[in-house]
Image (tube, rainbow, N blue to C red):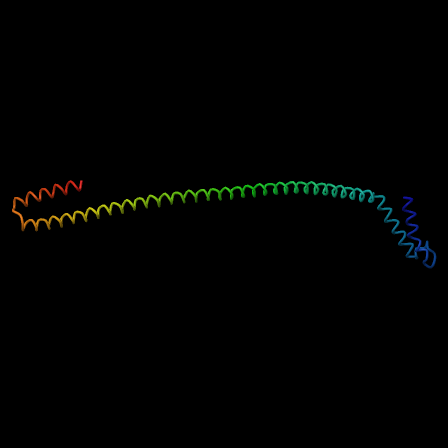
Length: 184
């Protein structure tokens, strides 16, 4: 309280510069000083400085708690961020492994398909060659049969003009036997 009165005395010193007696109710500076001192006295009586101090202390404690909470949340966020970065690296690594594995499998499947295609082509070529050989043998057989028929017809015509029916019959039988032996 003594401090306040010294403070008020210093603050009120400019009021002494007014004209006329200072301690008069006609002096507005004196009235203002009295009102101010009365106001401060009421504030002190109702413990307003202590209430304001308590409120400020509560506010300071709230700010400290908010700062501690913010610090805790920041640390938690950093941990979560680090966790997500680790997870992202793991996922990227897994994705790279999957891509590499898929490429290896694709190459293996391509090689497998290439071999299967090559085997299929070889089988088809072999089948075509066999078909060609069969057709060739059939053509040779057909040409041979046609040649035999032509030879028989020519021989029949020639023998028909030169030989008797008994000789012709014996010659035909002999020719048929020879042809049969050659074909087998």
